[in-house]
Image (tube, rainbow, N blue to C red; front, side, top):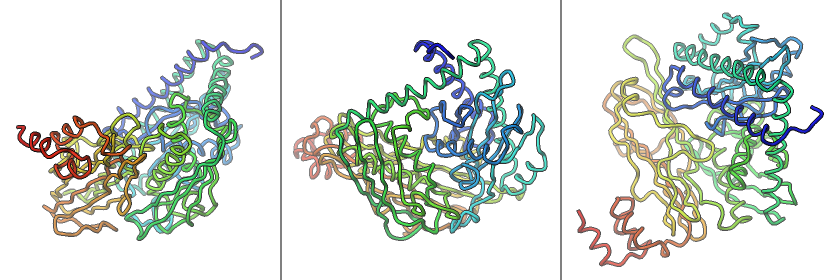
Length: 551
């Protein structure tokens, strides 16, 4: 357009674009079949401009941005733009050839044509709870790899491709229904974008999209400019039940004017599903920097322009083919922790302590009486880090994950499992002037023979506190028979019990400075015990006696 677009029109069209991706997400959830999507909402939706830049993303799973960043460039690299037509739907999940980040997240992308012009891409991804009980030495063990392929061509289904995909799935009925839900969500987005362009005109909508990205860039640059120039470093350990020992992740954040460089130091990639491809690292960095500096910055490609992210090629944080990536979320969460830690040194008193720092995954799979395979996936939250002016939140997902829990009723209706306990863990929160959030305990009983796998972190490490705050407790597993090791898969017999406790968040500030009424309240609510109240918080004996006498 020759004349600049006014900011009110930009805001109106920007709100319309955001409402489109939010509606797309709700349509996906409501139309899906599997519990992981319809109940736990492990899915995301987004709009990209015609060049493959992020226009907006629904408030679902920040980690899924990593699956979006590479998919449109991968499609345009594989297919001639002149051969792409209205009604085409592309499907991909491969981390190296498909623009995604791990194989369970299947991405569908549909071009949006208005008046014969390609103006945008409707993109969504959903975590398909399949490919269970696999190896993770390299990506070939982790499931079916899908480069960008055309599932629909001009509105016509490629049934041969769909049948090949379903044959390689353990729960094909769920996969088919969830794919159809994803396809319907994309079609809804195309329809809404056409409606928007009919109202405002294609050129105005395109100009607004460009202006929104420029606005996000300006806000990010202004936020960075508020940090004193310098280099701020932080290290943390990374541990996982998928491999023995610990690794050290480090970051040096250099601020110069309106620009920021994040330089990561990490060990070489491993033979285990813990590795991050580069777009996963970008998603972790973009989310964390935005969350700390200015949460109101629009989640589009503009916010990334002032940021430079570097990590050694072939490392666990920037892996190369054929490294396994299935459990990449664990390492990505630690990336968030160390970026938070570095920014806490740049902005003291403005950053929260470490949250639970993991995404504890419990996977059960088995065969029902009719011989059909079932797979149940749950990612369990934990404690959030204490904030500079408030306690951390309890029983939540932190940073890159944002799924819901599976309600007990749905769990026990769909699968041969019983949930015996679902509660917050006393004493799991890191102490401080403001304490961290509490971790979660879930105790399952198998009602039929099945196989159980857990993927966890913060096993031997703890979520750190800030400004004198203490660390939260880590991950604990108990099979009810004295075993606490949770490396590898375990066969559960009917009646066998498994208990999972997730980490609490770190505390903020000296615990001795916590308000006495807050200590008494924590004691009364069962968040801490009398010994912690006395030894850590310095509660007087008469206060403890009074609290213990209360009904």
